[in-house]
Image (tube, rainbow, N blue to C red; front, side, top):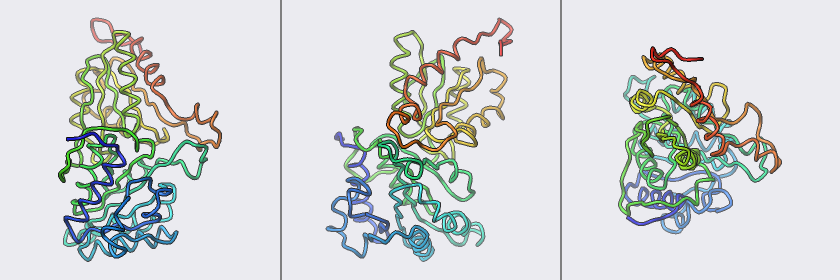
Length: 336
């Protein structure tokens, strides 16, 4: 183990994947340019050449279609979209093609493609360059959706995504690239569909995705000073969701806050809320479920407005404090 940055963990995973399996190749806009993908692809084209690392024109639909076709022939492409916003252009290939082939051919054909979408936000980039679309892809049958938050997880889940025999939407966030953590040097994978408890607690469950995990951890430290003991769950995989992990935690704490930095309506927070509402745990909750999300509005192109738009740890702290104001009598009849 050694400590490396999130972006370095992605880079290491890509090097090891291409070196260990000749069926793996990387294709997308700017794979040789730090302006597009940060330092995540440094050294790949020098080591593996332009036949394994393709820097493409701006044509999301065509590039993704090439990847789907290659996957159908047995290759394991990684198709990168350096700005997730423009994956909309590839929705036909993703939703109508990649997601459906395995089902339509009765399981006799697979599409082992990893579609890597990078969320860019902040820096006054505005509404067309700041979108987090995890909920849209999670809605589509046939797709798995992963959102690693730590350097350890981003390497392990990228490897697992490429090894999977069906399409995976692999989502990272540029805001995570400088976070550091322990990462093994060898190739390893993390099972898709398994979340993890980042902090054990008994008073409130906080379920978070991507960089909001770090905001939740910050909030947990602040709340600890107030005598509040929160449990933090990193979902890691949005679909399939680790429901049992959610159930176990909410059963213990009986309170739930969800932190996901995408839009509120029909978002990941709504799906988690519905999952708990449909379970036997609903009647045991001591307070309503609270969602910390982006407002249902496009991202602003103003640094001042961005400070109000993007949720912070203080928003999680306030949500937990509000939850704890609800009370139940001895018969567990609550005041909401």
